[in-house]
Length: 598
Image (cartoon, rainbow, N blue to C red; front, side, top):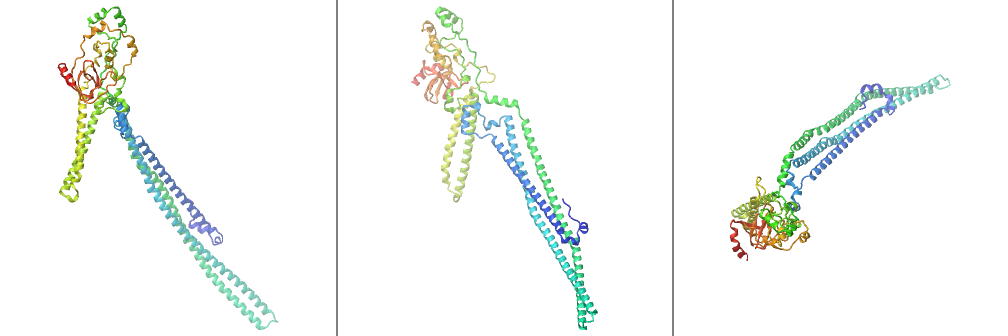
């Protein structure tokens, strides 16, 4: 800061002659320029802080948008349908919080949201504590500065007026002295001249005395004016001006202190949120340290395990068998006599691998699965059914809560008819009762499917069961051999060329007759078709709702049950489409059941 003039400086540097030039005014002009520059600096600092607050708000907004952008979305209808068909490729909101890694990411997003909030706090505090306060102070500073310089200008004008009065009195005294001197010289000249009359001499003497008197009066006036000016000048330079300069100096010092305090507040506002920001970062670190790769891997295993049993060994397909038959039919008899099951000609000996090779075509039609989730593997089907049961129970509870609330409202209306009509809620209560009954029926239906699935899931230590009847000797008929193959793969996963079977067929001879005596698979129970099923795929059979059929092979965990209508019609149907009644003596009821179905 430019140091302001001190009294000693003014005493030694400012003298009366200086007032004739603008040097006296220069002090005020310089100080006026300097103080205006100080106000400009203060306003520039206010503008700087305002831009900083705008940056903080913009940064906080961007952080919040970033956090919101990567937050997991709530389930939509489309996502849920997609999840039903493709459960392995869809992670929704509930899955996002299931794994420790994604939970850590979710915690990071939440902490970043809090982190953004601290930048908003910085902006708010800077606006209220710095820009708002300094803006008001600048207005006060401008008014104070204007007042001080107004007082200075007024004092300057007053001393200049006194100086002008002194100059006028001095010039008048000088003029009167010169006039008195000329009058004295004229008197002396007239008195020495013998030709001048005595009256003229007396007149000149009186004129000289008058001029001397006027000179004396001007002298006295000049002396008085000079004394007054000296007093005013002393008061001006030793009292008024120093006081004004002192006030301006104090004003300037307060401005400097204020801007320094604002800069300190600028730093303190940031420092106050550092602990909270540090806590946010600590929470992010804590969430990162909670990531457990073992737990996440186990969660994936539990979520996606299918419940299918591993397939059995694939039997060797001996394509030389037709040639052996033509050479010697006894070789086949010998092999049968040895108790070895040769692969049947015309049929596939592949294991029942279709659950692992292709998805069931029925479950993929138009991207929608059946209501009982039979298109899913057993373990995932159980989970989906359990989720559905829980969801329905929650809906029932909501309906019950609404019914209880309306019942209480009705009681209030009955006791206080002026509050409302009790009959107005009867319609809604009836609707709630119907909804509750429908939901309970739905729960029973899904609980039945859930019990069915849980009853069929294999234990962990259970030995893998055979996948289908293909490991047993096939039916002897060459005509039914292709149907036998289709039955072992109801989803149509048969991959061999049909032409190969056609080319290798041989006439039905004694070779086929040997197998005609084999009995078909025994029935192990009966079943009732709950729904109509159109068996359009190979190995499946069509059934009508309510139809009674025989069970010849249980569901092995793949969602299919093998049934028989009569001696010539058998195939696979979805397990969820039939209600199975297992009976060890089922073979004895074949004829009565046949009559009932007819």
